[in-house]
Length: 76
Image (cartoon, rainbow, N blue to C red; front, side):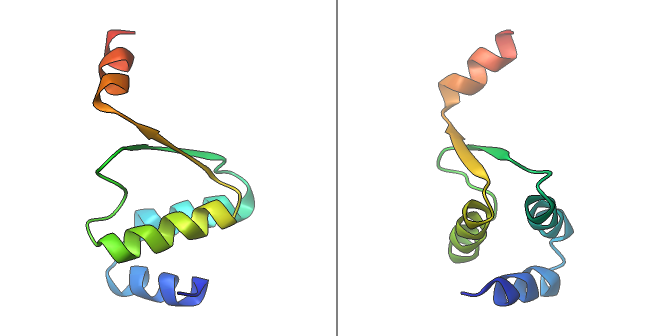
């Protein structure tokens, strides 16, 4: 899926926060994204994979957190 196709689908579904993530990645304002492993960013699995792939292509490092990682962060 091309960037234009991804953006078109996100626009159609009114997913403005995800579009902003892509814009931030393009401008260099987003360098790392932390996601809970197994949950992802979007409910649509295919679109989720395509968005994550695009973000990585734009230079974003994606870090997957486990439930244990979240527990440790809450304790800090």
